[in-house]
Length: 283
Image 1 (tube, rainbow, N blue to C red):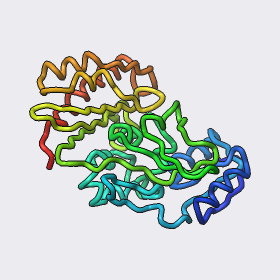
Image 2: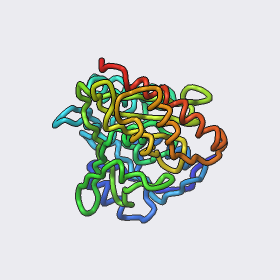
Image 3: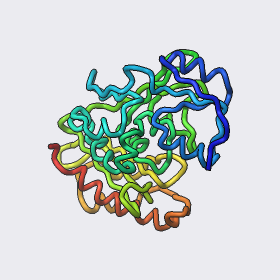
Image 4: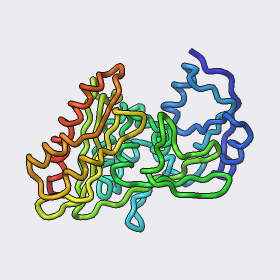
């Protein structure tokens, strides 16, 4: 299929992109295009204007500063996958990157695009939520920072306004006591997950504290399992893991991949394995 007709503009700065988005009420930002182009071709999206931000310089860096890992919106998945900064200071992202699509997708797709598109079955939104990260956006009123807990609002819906451009994402840099875990179940490697789980915690003696569990593929947004998080806080044991699984408050709907009941069962299976990852010493 072919997309509906649209106008095209190439922005040279974030300010120019914001101004271009204001020209038409149904304009869209084009970054990597790995999701947008597919929806255009299937006519699930029919914007009047595409604002291409690939010509904006300085928005693809990955740096460790101020206790945070900052990833520019235009950083490609492959850059994050190969980044020493990500490997050293954002191990959860390092674990998730090889599961995103296939090499061709990762060569072109952007970190900012994945977060802004907010597919509920995608890995990166859940990782950002599990890490307690934040999103930097710029719009007509200037720059603002949005916490990941406040960013994902509904199916493909975020806190970004129609004229906002996502410019960077930030996650806390891993410390010696940081623990992370990641797992997903797919029919084939590179497919969207039937269900997945991204997790982070702090080591606390023989147990865990500050546990954050973010499931994906279970609802309209990535979902934190807060009751299970609370159940896992304390000295680790099989009894505590069983209690966390019993406390899972997920209510996934049926979809083309699996029934809601199957997903709820698989959520417990993933949790048991991910908690064991959380208990492993930092490398």
